[in-house]
Length: 426
Image (cartoon, helix red, strand yellow):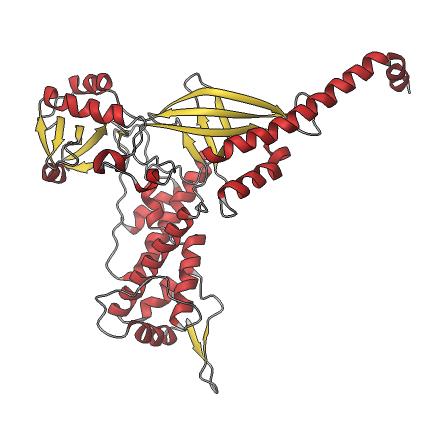
């Protein structure tokens, strides 16, 4: 992407009126680690643009921009761990790059002293970190002054640490995904059940609702054959995997969308249309083209199994998570969500208490925004499946108490109409 193109992105002048095709942006980044700062700046601004125009920081068309944007809380946390481990103030989270020729920590420590991110006390010789040592922009800018092999190795070590930080956050249920959107693409969102509860301190108009939401994201054989009937490209059609796992083959449907670059859109029976486009050369390495009759049995098998069987159990015959009695949703076609809506703030402490007691103190509350097939829009809080029963019991108790209070109030009003009239006149 040229400098003028970057300027046009931020001034909004790349998409002209009556354009036949939308502009395509490509990041051109050298292998010099320090220059990742340019990509980080562009990615952050493009993601901000998506948030401003769509009300969602993940609303950019290319959602993988996040891999270029390091300037977030996870990146700053990873950088803090990296810098402290280099000066022996903290234990390393990951191992240094195995192909580094020399003593990694010793060499990068000297390099960071040279660029001013690590200071040395004159008298004691004690190493101290610069006051802005966890500033991503400053870090990427300063390491440009280090030797090329050092800055590349240091950036790789930072990237590996960042990956570990994100994985830990996901494992502990603390990863912030922003607002989760359901039903915005090809997903089919249905309400299968709803429970209503009155909230303490409110009238009958104050209540919360617990929706049971069913999300279908797969593609049936009937839907696949409709798309297949409209395909015209010589390489379009059904494909079967060359690899056989657990006596099964993968069936996919591909459609060419960019003849010049040979890019194909892929449809799968369990997850439907894929966001990532595939290069034809990569497809040929793993799949072979077949007639529809040959793909039928494999497509139906995976489509039917993915309703309640995860990818691990389908391809391996077992799932470690499922064997422990836990729910695994990897590769599932049908997923169930429990969404709490309405006056959620009035029962927030109750919800926190239930989630903390059942799922642990590190659970992350996830906001979801969805639109059902009948057009209803719902915004609420996702309740983990193992927390639904205790939460329903707790809300039912409060609901009964509130209903009793309302009934007593109505009964008192019926028995003392004169008192009510006097209060009104007063």
